[in-house]
Length: 279
Figure (cartoon, rainbow, N blue to C red):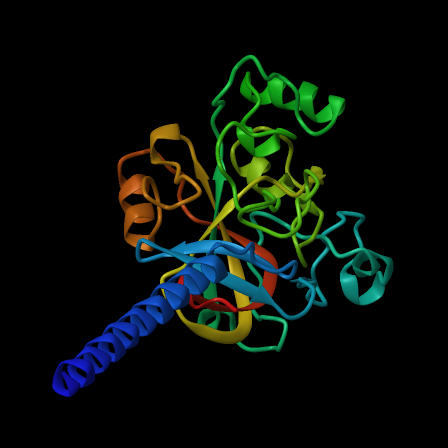
């Protein structure tokens, strides 16, 4: 009897131990899942690289480079003798500087490809950020791309979409630590849509992000703009379809689903890590 009693105690003890371990494991799994399901912080955005969802953590504001002999406001005076030019930074699409904000040569700077939805996913939604921009886009392109809509019909990482992805829901034309205005003049002039040396200032376009690396300490990133012209190539929020890597972007460009790279004088300062490693 004593032996049976002792054996029973041992069996019960082992059972409790197994339950305890399994319970702790299950609790740990739930906590991990809960942690990964939390929205990212207000100074973070998402991005894609190598088919993975990433988190960018911004540590300071953007920079748009004005070099001494630039005339980005086209008033006939170079920046060196026109201080008013760069008291309001002009962030230009279609202008490539020679240096980054630290003074390092531009060919040594890490690249961030900003993809822009340049298609109309919902033709019933015919309004851009402003009435004047709506009129301009209809006149020049004949439609309103999702890039300029207050409520785009596709997932974008900027402006911040809000919960469950991000803690903050950004207003149209904004994104954490980004400029709120862009000058599309040089890019539109190259396309024959406006005369050369014309400023076309618009709210920052709706966009998502592509890198060619998944981990990086905080550095300045040179922004490269790409228009995605085919909705079938656009990535969803989870990154399960569409352009989620530099290779996929290059394929889309080769297939005529995205424009060639367009340089900018726009830089962002952030670190990068995979989504599952976020704090």
